[in-house]
Length: 276
Image (cartoon, rainbow, N blue to C red):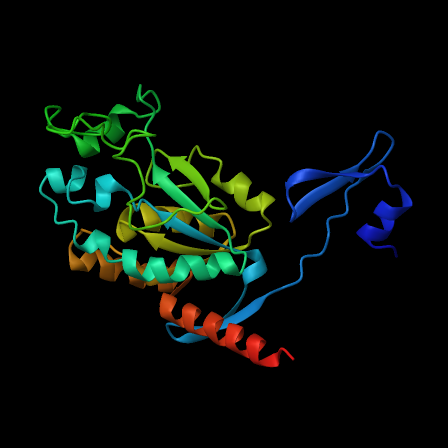
């Protein structure tokens, strides 16, 4: 049986067609080769709560949810309405260590951020009520007093990722409009084009947008890993405890990013020592 490269050499006119190397045809005017290239696995074994698990980095993506100014910055929306955003900033330091390392292993980093349309036409009254129950407050798309920044409006300072987290040119950004990053977005299509089956989750609030996105990922058949030290919430402690319990019990695994960093650092060290 011939390989994809053999088939391509048989017909030099075949051209690659597809946005991802993990999901690509080769075509010409007279022929279509639908056989995808095999992606060599990159297995990594790490300790989760209660179980040793192995994942394939070649089929893994990192999902970072809502690490945005309005949720995490002292001058953002949550701080304006009196929420202590210090807990929402806790994932910053571990993410600063983890994300560059994942990128070096070609693991896609996907930022799933709340980003309203300026006209708010995709936001229902029921959704707007959650964040502005009196109708007289500052809710989604409203201007913050003083700065005038529109709350979580796509393209604004409010919806931007906090400065402490560097966004790489290779990263992918997806705008969401509900607590689930899958609802009415292109996230699932992107993941399938990337050939991803395993998702690592980080961000805020872990009991709301992170959990809703993780749950829906589980419903769609993805393997789900919640990185406990890279996720946080401004909700009461019992919300975090319930979230961790439910993820472990129903939706996936809970682990620390430190175990991933240690394993990848050790793999790099061994690879360096093996070089002549």
